[in-house]
Length: 130
Image (cartoon, rainbow, N blue to C red; front, side, top):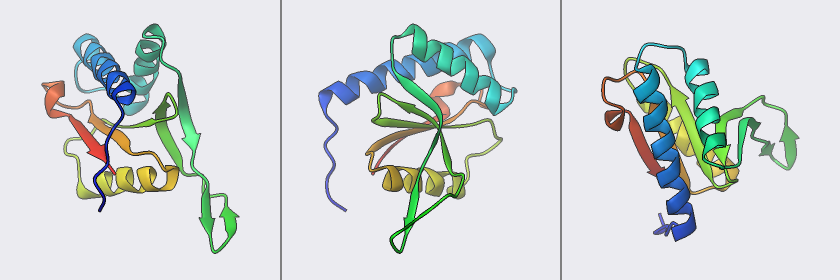
């Protein structure tokens, strides 16, 4: 795999996103539904003046045909960073594979797999570059 360099502007956005994640977890803690964290995180992103899209559909092209798969990314920030949110006991390899596939299909290079169901949110944030 080639070495991906993340632009400084994207890194700054990433730092803002992590701050937003920390704010949500600090206020809510673990134990809620993923959908609650998603809505609250969107409020934090908005308050931080970051542009985002919730439940962004990912088109799939298979053998030249566009397939309506219903595949959706939880949140895309500034058209460059994917946020995949979880509220699970353990992040599984399938969750990592899901994020890698989203990055590949979207042609984006940076994503965060975030599990809010942890006592310390720093243990629930995985930064993924593809």
